[in-house]
Image (cartoon, rainbow, N blue to C red):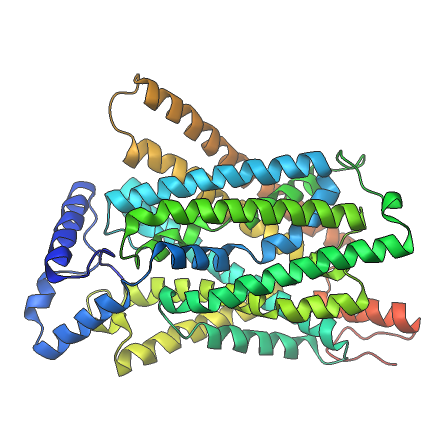
Length: 494
């Protein structure tokens, strides 16, 4: 919340604040909270501030790992099998492992920036260090849009889950409203330490859902056609277009989009230097889960694997898997709302005790901010109702920067020390140049592919809301109906 996470005593708070102020003066960035104001406060206000500092300085590396898992492992694991179907097994595994290692490295760079500049509370603050006020505002807009898109994605997935579980003719917008309300309620706790408690449920949920999907698809394929007869390939599809291929890669990149919230999470740590343990634990967990999920589900289902992958588990198991996945859908979605709320709320009340959300006015303003954010995300989910393209747009426009080219630029501008011709700097410079190129290629190629795919879908007339498509598909398969379908909520004539 603007103070170093080492603020566990007045002496440590003073040291950390002085360090942040010195860094801010050097790079033109003021500390997030004006320490001089504390002296102007009365005793009650100082108590509020001290309580707020304590409230937002309780995160250890284990809980940091949990909140990173909550933020990262959700939608990504559900879309990767369909990426393998496009790229083939070999390229899919290489991309999953390789991009995962790159994401761990860039996350390490982000942590170094936080340690060197303790006053950096959110990603836009790092943007100001690199590019001044323009950089801060640009990255601020990017981060807000990315977090809104993430929340919208989870709202949309929640809608798909409810439609799949209930198999009812209830208006898809109703399920969307219910999903948005659940996301809002789970976003009420403003502290990531508190969110970490929900994270344990989240992790168990996604592991169980993935396990059911893998086992279910394997049993289903073995009974129906035999695993040896499943149509899958080690190589990319023969008719793979540039658009389809890049969308598949973008979905894998999206799965490693934990870096955008790392500054916000680390701002609550009581021992920030322990972050390295967290990113390695997260990176190893993600790479193993994504590789196993992508390869096994693709091998069991083949080229017709669905996205999200839970749709490929069969009619009954799909319902069970979606039911078990509900916690991860909503908990992982809500943490994006919390990060967005903290970013906006903290900026509005930058120099006021209200920012600590431990007073009546603090809670009122906090609830107002997250309610507006959730409402906007709900609207986005209804306007852009196609799953893969939504993920790809997010990856191309925003994750490419937060995960790749911004951290690479941070190394060049903020972290590098010594002369360029030193062996260490030459080696790291080459590594970060590669990371920078990966980010820029993803930005250009991914954006083009996503827009091209949307145009193709529009020409084919397939831009129906996913929930409606699911309802129509289920009705056609289970009842073989040929009646007219009105494309309005619940207007399915049996």
